[in-house]
Length: 286
Image (cartoon, rainbow, N blue to C red; front, side, top):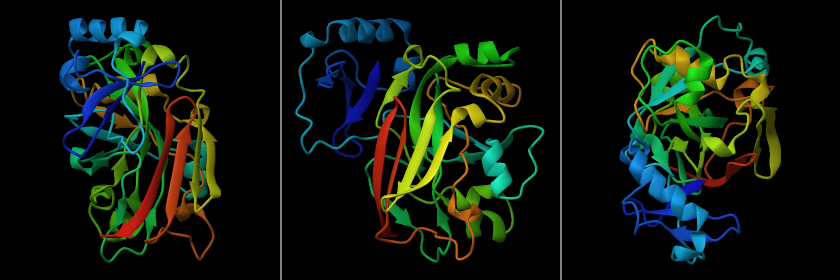
C-alpha cells in the first residue's frame, strides 16, 4: 500500500494511492496514518481490505492538494551517519565499525514539497537523500537482522537537510546542524514493507537546480536496514511510528571540490527513491 496524508499543515487527512494512481480518502476508515494505526492490527486490516477494493473509497481531487508528511505523531527520528561506503570515502572518513547515531526532532518534518528554510547565518546548508524506515512493532533487544526487518512497517523518502558548519565546526554534537526547522522533508508516501521486496536494492537520486548530484543505491549501505534496526534495539526501545533515516550516498556538497556548492535561497532540490516517490523543495531564507 501507498499511504499518505493530504491537506493543510496540521490538518492532514489519511489517504491511499491506488494501483491506478487515483488518490482515495481513508478518513472514513481511520483517523490518521500515525503510530496508533501502525500498532493496531485491526485498523490495519481495515485499511488493507479497503486497498483491495479501492473503488469503494471516495476519490480525492489531487489538483492543488498539498501532500503532507505520510506519518503523523512521529515518536523519534534516529539517524545513521556515514552509512554508505562511497559517502564515507568522499568525506575522507573511516568506515565506521558500528553505526554512528544522531537524532532529529520530529518537528523538523515537513511535507515532500514544502519550503525548506536556509537557517540564518548559514553558509553550508547541504542536501542528503535518504531511505527512511518506519517502525511498525515495538523492538527491544532483537537477535537478528531478519527480526529487524520483521519490525518494519514501511519505507519513505527522506531529505536529511544538514548545515555543515553548525554540525562540524561549532563544537558539541552533530545535532545542532541537523535540527533546524524544515530540515526533514518526508514522503510523499509511506510504502508498506510488503511492497518493497529488498530494501537493499533501491536506487536513490537527488538533483539541485536540475543537475544530478547524487546517484546511488542502498546496496552500498555499510549497515543494512535489518541490521540497523537490530542494533538500535539494543540501545533504545523502538516503537511504532519511530523513524530511522538510514544515511546518504556520495554526492553531497561537503564532498565536492572547493568552492563547494552549498544550498542558497532560491535553489530547487528534487529527490527520489525508486518505488517510494519523489520530492521537490524550493529553498527560502529563514
